[in-house]
Image 1: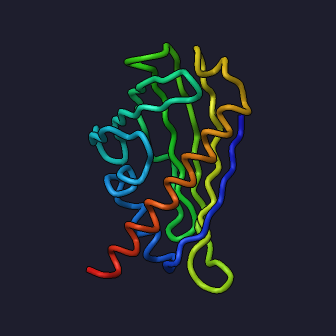
Image 2: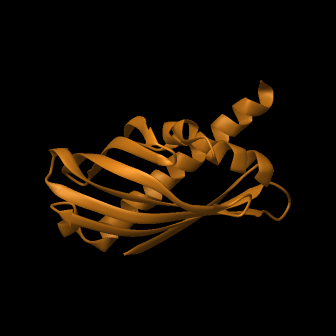
Image 3: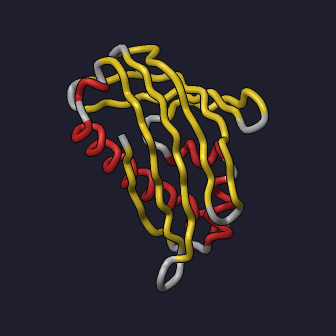
Length: 153
């Protein structure tokens, strides 16, 4: 299934791009991420927990940079399985596009191709898309907070 979300941050594309190049900082903004370990250049192990409806799971994912064009977009892939909670698997290809926003700031557009197996996959597209919107709103708020905090330092 494909999921698309977009939001605007009040920072120039250069600042947003620089933030996204720091995986540790980005991970701090993603709801449910418990840890990020570097496995090698542009390759990471991510542990994240999520709850969709009454079903929760903790996933261990291997995330890898798939490509980037500075100040324009960054792409990565993730694959993993649950290590606690509901049994399942997750595979995604994610792209983040950056563009100057009208009136200033940066428009951030997230596009994900997601495949979820197991109990979470049985919840269906609507439940997963709803959770994605909720997570994107929380991520956007955290990202704005981090970028604003960075302006004050």
